[in-house]
Amino acid sequence: MPIKFKAFTLAEILITLAIIGVVAALTIPNLVYSYKKRVVETRLLKFYNIMNETIRLSEIDNGDKKTWSFPTNQFADNKEKFYNKYFKNYLKSERRSKEGYNYYVYFTDGTAMSIIYGTTDYIYCIDAKYLKQSTEYLGSKCFQFGFYPDANQSEFTRKNYLNKGLEPYVSNKLYASDVTDSTNSPTCVKDENDECVIMEEKDLYTNKLYATKIIQMNNWKIPDDYPWKL
Image (cartoon, rainbow, N blue to C red; front, side, top):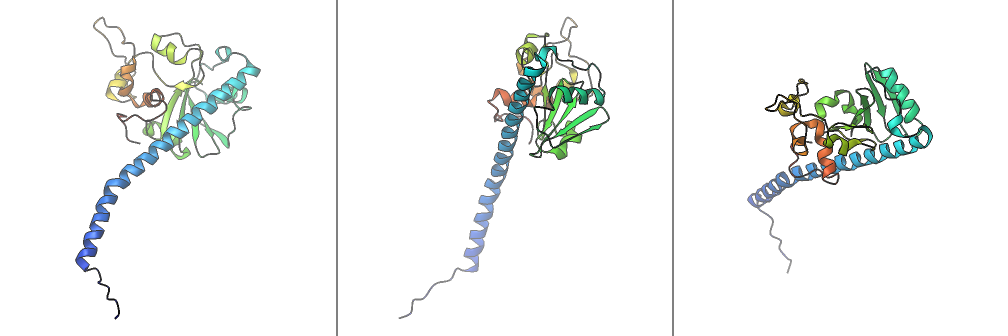
C-alpha cells in the first residue's frame, strides 16, 4: 500500500515564513552591529601597535622621540618632511598624498590616516574612503590619536602622553565644544573662579574626539555604554 504524504497548507507555510522573518529581524541587526564592533576593535588595536612599533624602531636611528623636530605650523610640506624622516623607513604604506594642510597615508589593508595639527594629532580611518570627511565620521569610522611624548600640562594629559608614543587623543582642558559635541567653539568651560576647567576621565563621553580613549580604557573593546553609532 503506497504511503501518502500530507502536504503543508498555504496557511502553515505563511506562518513559518512569518516566524523566520521575525527571528531574522531580531537577530540580523545584532549580528551586523557585532561585526562592525569587531572590525573597529581589531583595526584600531592593529594601527595602535603598528604605529608604536614604528616609533620604537625610529628612535633607534633618530633618538628619543621627545627630541624629534615637531613642526610648529600646519603646512603639509612640513608634515611630509616629518613623516619621511621619522616614519617612512619603518612604516609600510601603499601611497601618500597632500591636500591643503593635510597629509594622507594609505595602507595596504584599505585603511588610512591623516596627519593634522602639525604632526602631533592623527586621525585613523578603518576605511580609506572616509578619510577626507573624517570629522563627520569621528567615533564611528574614524578615530583620533595624539603624539605628545613631552606633554607637561595637566596630570590627565601627562598620564596619557608623557614618554609614550601614539596614544588615543585627550585634551588638557574641557572646552565648550566638548559639552555641545561640536568642534566649532574653542572657548574653554569656566569654573566659579573664571578659570578653565581641567579635563578629567569622566569628560571623555562628551565629545567624539575622545572615542578612541574610551575604547582603549575598555581593553580595546567598545563598551556597552558607548555613546555613538558605528
